[in-house]
Image 1 (cartoon, rainbow, N blue to C red):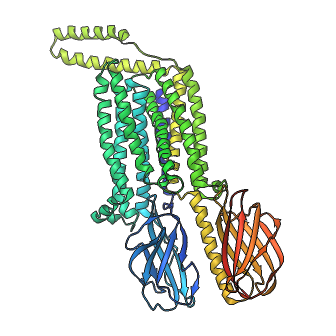
Image 2 (cartoon, rainbow, N blue to C red):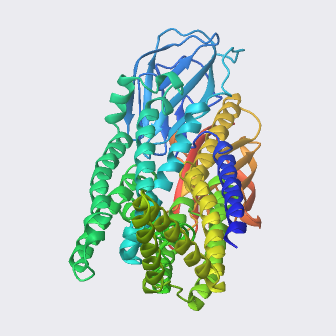
Image 3 (cartoon, helix red, strand yellow):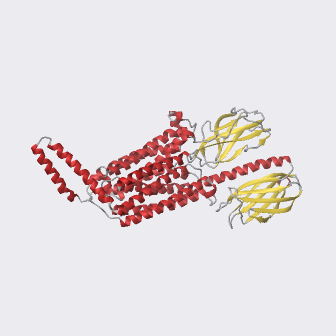
Length: 635
């Protein structure tokens, strides 16, 4: 029976590794948490006079280097001067040379967001009139290429090493203390430590190139490494290495002095190891939480400890599952049903913690139900939720097998008479001829191998244990794919940020087009304004159309859309027109609701030409409302 299982195990492992490789390879460049939400000059705008500087506004703080912001003329020549600087808040700028000629200019940026991910992009604006340009903006990506793939692989291996290290050690200490003396279990936990340590060193070396040039040759650049050590991400990686040194001491005690103690002597040492191991494991988890998505954005002070609990729950569950798989397939010493039942209880608690923290993280990173299906982060999260549900379903089957599991332990005293007879036979033959001691040792080894094989056959003959082995193997297979999806998810821009960026981009584009139409002095005016009332489902874009935007009667249409562009209704929309230069207004307008996300008012009288302020008040609940405004040239 065991012989037929082994090829299946190897085949399944190869298929899972291929699947994970495909996921990591097709993940593409890392999408950052930071997103460009505004710029001056705006994208696509045509200005009469060349600006003194270009400024970019992001959704969060970013880190700059000397070449983070560049402005290129139509021939591709850099026209910025000096280093990029912080204008204020989340806005950053760079000075331009004076006397720039007319034409189309390209702004490129490559920065590092506060959650450690690189982000790059480009856009154009024109001075005087648009022109042809030799600069291509389609290739502006960050975190791609060979270095990006290696960095993604390093992240996957670091997560895998952390899970095996923490979960394997917790399994031994809390569920199967006899496992401290089992060689395969020792190799598993030490392998997790080596994997996490190697992956952390790899990430530290790759970090400078990953967030900068993307060149393989820059991996061993000591200047870049020095710059990385001064960043939040670099400090987190160094802290992880220091904590791994403490983890090495923990492992040496767990598989050394602890294994040699008697059961009664283990109690105090178990408590000490549990406290120390929990502190080290929490510190390792915090090295991710303090440098990535949880460290920035909404409720960061709550999100970081929640993320630590989430990572520990994942490690305890999936790492313990890996340890159980090794105990069932590789260990010569049969694992007791009591140990399996203890792990089943621990796994259940881990799943509860995982679901609770996962719900909070999903709300924090998505912000709306529509983001589940309309953002890449949401789509990946749906895949992760499906895999977790599948894993829980298989775990339920495993719990049923555990409840029926019967211990099959081969007693040592049954084998003792055989060993004594073999030893006696070997001793007798040794008296009659030379080399008897070697022959005795050989016979003893053969007998030990036969005893081990007999013990395995007896153990594997238990149908409940065989069923448990198969279900745990299936759990481990799903867990490997789940880990790959999670790795890609941590490198993907959260849905909340993606929707905010779409709304800002739409507003910027519309503002640019409306400015052009307003300056022409004729035709309809269209204004897009982003709003956030602060309540649930309170973000969106309101669009106001005024036609023909002249003195006298006008048609006005108001459209309300979510950040993803989908129309939706709100309780109230009001519009007010003010000509501040002549102290006229505000002229209140209450449009009629026409259909979902659409309000209209006819015969809107505008008494005088000028630069009118159009203010829109939107109310998304009984208490949540806000007013946004823009100016438009009427007449």
